[in-house]
Image 1 (cartoon, rainbow, N blue to C red):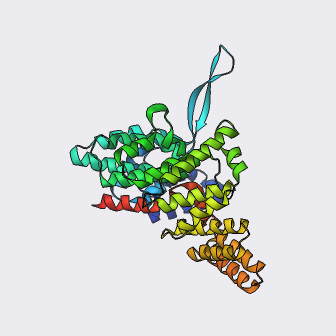
Image 2: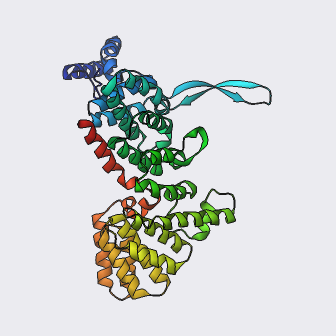
Image 3: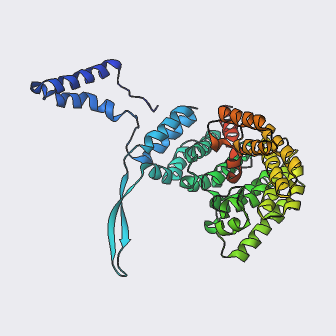
Length: 410
């Protein structure tokens, strides 16, 4: 059944409802028309979101039908409609005394119920077909669960692992390869980093991905990168060594130090893999800058700054400038900041550093021009590569999403 996402009533129905409301407001004698208005207009009002059911668990199938037809914008509106549903009331056991267990009732957001039931309902939806059609439905469900999880991955971790288990019943494919990369991108940004590496429940999703595609370099980089995303709270590239220790959720300072050293060793070992070498060097260089190891940081960053990847070039040049500034090499720092600004003229972090160095060197009009251009061209500071640094591979998510959508058209 095709799901409508706009009010299904005709224009005539809408005008009649408005007329009834105006009549009821203007005449006490017409109060009886309220019941008529309710009978005719209520279906329209109740179906503004046009969901086929108020039960969130029963909305998974129609949501997947939208994806099966390639109606992605409608599916996005459908998700928003689910989020607007009232909470589901559930009975829970709340223990208020050592011996006594007291039942209570709590409200659970409808979208959480939808996410929690996704795997079971999607399994039935997929298995309603056979053969190649069933495999196509699995691919459709795999994309749908990721797009539903965009912005809140942890809700859909179980459904994602269900898809992974289903894919492992078949030989690896190019579609699954891209899907596994997309899972990595979303999980590292949406609070799902622990899901990628946790060993309980036998999940450890990253190991599953590596076992399916052992030669994928981004999975190799994901091992140390995900350690940082999962273990360092609010990881930003500017925090110093003591902050790395304080923010890490490892037991003590000594353990934290060993953890950081292990990550550095892993990153150094990836510098020989062509596709990810420069990013590995960039991330190792930034960590060494955070630790105050300026010489080794400079050795890493000066190589990474030559990358063709805009993100890697921008971040490497920016931190190369910071290292050179810390070493007192101001002319070289200015050149590095200029290179970062050229890598992305809209990047505010680089623009501010470059402008500050220009100002210090007496080039005030140039400094003002840099700031003016950056503020004019970008009104969203969160778009700076600086803020992407702590989100792992999330910068690739939109590209992966588009690839998956295009694959489903074939």
